[in-house]
Amino acid sequence: MSDAKAYSAASATSPLAATTIQRRNPTERDVQIEILFCGICHSDLHSVRDEWSSIMPTVYPIVPGHEIVGRVVSVGSAVTRFKPGDLAGVGCLVDSDHSCPSCQADVEQFCHDAVFTYNGPDKHLGGVTYGGYSDSIVVDEHFVLHVPTNLDLAGVAPLLCAGITTWSPIRRWGLTEGKKVGVVGLGGLGHMGVKFARALGAHVVVFTTSPGKKEDALRLGAHEVVLSTDAEEMQKRAGTLDFILDTISADHDINAYVSLLGLDGNLTLVGAPEKPFPVSAFALLFGRHSISGSLIGGIAETQEMLDFCGKHDITADVEVIPIQDVNKAYERLLKSDVKYRFSIDMASLKS
Ligand code: NAP
Ligand code: ZN
Image (cartoon, rainbow, N blue to C red):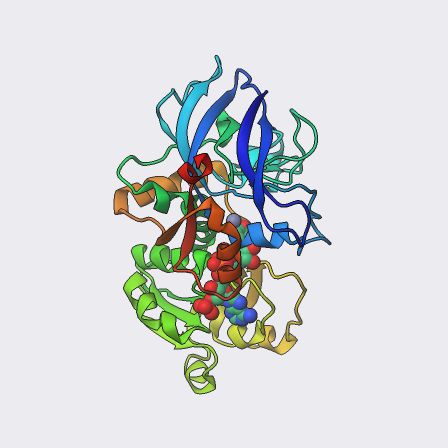
């Protein structure tokens, strides 16, 4: 085992603070990675504060972080796809059973033995897995992604969660030319949804509660921006959208968005607020609307997304911060004040 520097939280009410954790010695199938940048996902904050306690209770101490990009330091003897010096990405998954129908169908995220990058059962060391707010990580080769060499690495890190989580439903629902797509919430996920839907040729309408984000939404690729608190503007869009990607992290009235769907329109939830919300039957009945959910994406699909980003020069818009500012960043995330993802520069862990 080796020591790694990290930031962890000791309880749901404690701030994140410097600590030392153990990483396993690489097995023959493992890749050892020096972490260069790690994005801050709102899921990190939900988990640190145990907001998902009824579904996935947090085990403390927690080291969050599942938007990891770094450089390969060493590889096990059976590793074929990576060598020391390569760039490498790790997202929300670090293990699965490799054999169930979900794994065979390249949707490892639905494997019953899927292990999340943090707060998952650690099969090697016992206890729970520790995530990317750290200077290093050791991961099974299958869950390590190739990172295009032409992109800014701070902006690549968020692709490993915010990127794949929005890419997967946008691809699954065939949102290309001729489709009208609503993106609700312009945060880490939302801004990636806008970039992807636009790059794939869809007409993109952003719904935001923040008047100050209107200009950015257009710059990021939206064709239209609607302030969701403006009832008249919302009413104008009733029945006009083929698809809505709902990325809101907090309690909200989902029916207000379902009513914006046209015939057979779908609203896909990727946001994961703490509490369940009421759904109006009539909002679904009229127009044969549906609501569904989507969870990150499989490894092959994540690689497809990264390759697309390399080809089309797409990265997240990031504010790079030293890890010492992580608690301040969480407070700003809660105020929807991030443009549009915090990316932690892990060089700051050395200081
Ligand atoms: P984020 O950067 O904080 O963005 C969330 C956005 O939602 C905010 O910027 C804000 O946009 C809007 N919002 C926040 N509070 C709101 C409220 N009370 N009412 C209406 N709108 C509100 O968060 P994120 O990292 O994108 O994550 C979003 C959600 O997705 C989180 O719940 C996260 O856990 C979840 N998630 C799910 C998956 C998955 O696999 N399904 C993967 C990653 C994350 P405006 O300022 O534009 O209104
Ligand atoms: Zn995430």
